[in-house]
Every structure is written in C-alpha cells, then in structure tokens.
Length: 189
Image 1: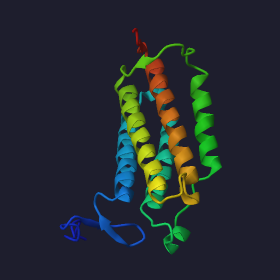
Image 2: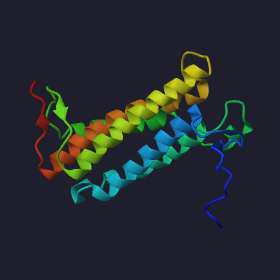
Image 3: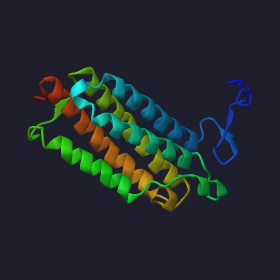
C-alpha cells in the first residue's frame, strides 16, 4: 500500500466522515493539534524514568482517547460516521482526575509559579501541556464557528477531557521531576 495518494496536492483533505475541506479548515487545525499532542505524549512514554513505569498504561489510554477525540473533530456534525466512533465520557475525565490526585499525594504543596525545566520527561510533559491548551482553544473555536456559542453536544466531553488533560500533564511534569530528584525551578519575580 502506498502512503501517498496525491489527493491532497491541491490543498484539500478529507474529513473522517468523507467531506473534502481545505487543509487549513478549523476541523483540520484542531485535529492537527490533537495529533501533535498525541505524538508528544508518545515521546514522553520513552523518556519516563523507570520509577514512573506505572504511568505508561495511563499514557497509552490517554493516547487512545486522543485518537477518539481526533476522530470526533474530523467528523462533520451531521455525519452518520459518529456511530462508529467510541465516546469520550465522564468516566474518562474521572480517570484523569484520579491519576492527578494519585500523583499529587507525593508532591510538595505548590505555592509559587514554576518555570518549566528539569528532567527531559518533565520538560516534554510541559511541552505537551502547552500543545494541549492550544488544541483546547482550537476545539473551542470550532464550537464557536458552528454558531452555538458553547461546545456542541458531540464535543462536550472532548473539551472537558482536554482541559483536564492539561492539568494531568502539568502534574505529570512535577511528578517526573520529583521522581528523578530534579528540584522545581520556582519563578522569582
């Protein structure tokens, strides 16, 4: 099977639901952010210190959820293709919150802003956090473009999940530094 088809050579691509749109369409922008985020998170897995091995299965589930979110974003709202996409639910959000709480038990109380630095896994978790925030902004923009002023029903939990995921990635960065003995670089104004 060839990886190239030439069908995008004129600046158009297909949504998951089959419609052809410009490669800078808001669906593609938001989906590209989620894809970039997923790739960075995959990199975090290989950088995690051995003491963080239990996080790898969490990250695998997060990557799977990001694939689902990408499929939702790349599917037009009225498409029957939604029937084939698994749902992101409140349970997925709760799983992130449970993981955040479990990591925070081991961390010192945060009373100041932190400058992103430390172990390479922590640095990459912070990069992922910023890409996650961008993805969230683009998904919010997507919902505003369709004229509803808030997330369409089919994007509700995707937005909540991305919001919580950025919190998870922030705590993961702190946790990685803690587990590897890197001190937090506190911002002193």
